[in-house]
Length: 243
Image (tube, rainbow, N blue to C red; front, side):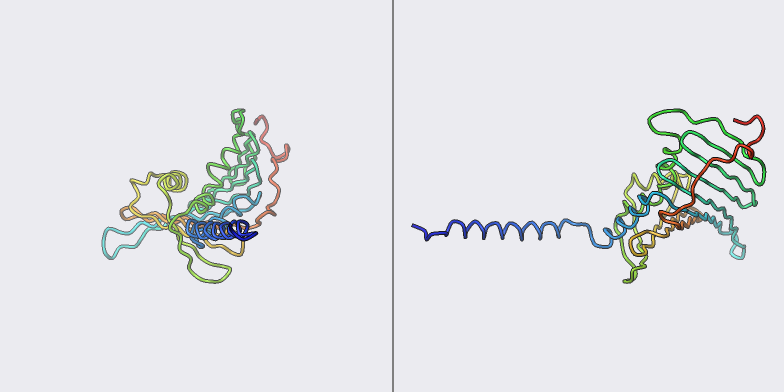
């Protein structure tokens, strides 16, 4: 006959072994720490609710002749985003042409240079507004890409560190389509990185190369959670008869 309490001691011991085993299994199957840090920081930026995002797109074309001069073209896009469906976008092309678009729900307004605002045709009504769709398919694409990064490597050991990463095929196809306007089969090589400052991702770089051309998109985030309000233009600023 076993001594009194023997069964309970065995049970406690077995539970202890199972608990240790669960911890070990969790550690073995958890993503690497660098990948966790990148995913958490990128997701925090994407989910903060509002931010200012500045994209600088620099396209460099190498010359055919050895002594030729590379051609460099650049454009900039400034976004003010407020969840769930407010966007204030300003595009400045290389020819100094400036276009500003405000998108709120299904309402859209456009102004070129210093001209008057024009109300564009409303987007189709549906379960998801036109601007909410633009948020998920354009504005949040850079942050969502980093939040899904694979093969992550951290460079630096401070609270402000650079992370390089790769993308799975579906995520890569989305980035190439939205940011580079191409398909992965057209692009010969990619490079992606992001900077995490404390708990948020504050910048990213997307680089694609094909033939003699390299396209580099630098992304910077600011005003995380404190972006200025996105409001429609005042009616007095709208062009007469627009709408």
